[in-house]
Every structure is written in C-alpha cells, then in structure tokens.
Image (cartoon, rainbow, N blue to C red; front, side, top):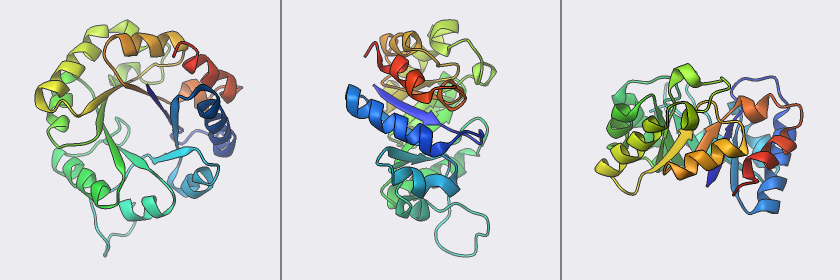
Length: 214
C-alpha cells in the first residue's frame, strides 16, 4: 500500500509533515510520500522523504511564464507528480501532455479522476497510477471506501479493462487506518489524502494510525 499525502495549500509546516512521514515510513516499511507546494519541493525532498509535485504543466522548456515544468520538479528532488487533481482540473489533451512531460523527466504519475468512467479514460493515457476522488467527499469525514465502495470497485475494474499495469489509488475522505484497510480490500493499491494529515495536530500520530493495519 502506498500512502500519498497532499499538503495542498494548507498552512502546515511541510518539513514537520515530511519528517514525520519519513520516520513512519522507515519504522513501518510502508511507502509514504509527501506532495508539498512547488516552492517547498526541494526542502521537503532534502528530508529524505519520497516527494511528489502537486501538478506539472504539459510544456517543455520555452516561453511559458508561470508554468511548472516537469524537469524543474525533477531537479528539485521530486520522484512523481499528481495530475488533474479535482482542484486543478485539466482537459484530456493537457492531461496527456502532462503525463508525457513527466515521463520525459523521469517522474512517476498519478492522474486523478472523479468517477470510474473518467478513470478508464485517463488510464488509457498510460500513467503509472490513477486515483478515484469523488469531489463531494474530498475534505470530508466520510471515506469513499466506506461511503460508496462501488465507486472504488468499479474504478479498479475500469482501469484493469484498459491497462492492467495501471494501479488504482483511493482518495477523498481517507483519514484513518480503517479507511486504508477498506480501500485495500476493495482493490486499491494506494491512498491519496490531505487534511487527515496536513491539518492534524500531530501529523506523526495521524500517519501511525494510517499504517497500523498494514
């Protein structure tokens, strides 16, 4: 099971979360990564935790003011990137461009989608993984794995029908070890969460709870 912690633009201390994630990953032998703001990528990567970007643009070097290049993200120490998060939606052609850009830079990719039909569409673009995140559950107290388990099952099936090598992550409302276990039982190989760790009073304790059933 892979745990990917998206810090979004929350006012948390990215180094505190990164250090906690690194230590819990080492203690538990569970793969944990942190996805901070672009400006914090290098500082977070320097802690030794696996680091992911929140977004890369479908651009190469050139006249693209304000763009986040996959190459720059990689040089800052990131190992992967999210693409098409529900708070950073993209057109399908641009998703494809961002996946290709990430591949050129040697970055792992996780493309987010709202439902199983979209999961099938983005899985066809050949990312390393996809994450199903119903937007109405993001940031809430109800996990998609418990509130609507059929979405996770159907997303796993939709991805497998297109490309069995594309892994499926479960997002939206994940905050406890029970949520992680439920996602795994439904066929997910990873989870994507944010507020459950980024807004926790004790990020390390929150992470320890997440990995406890694994």
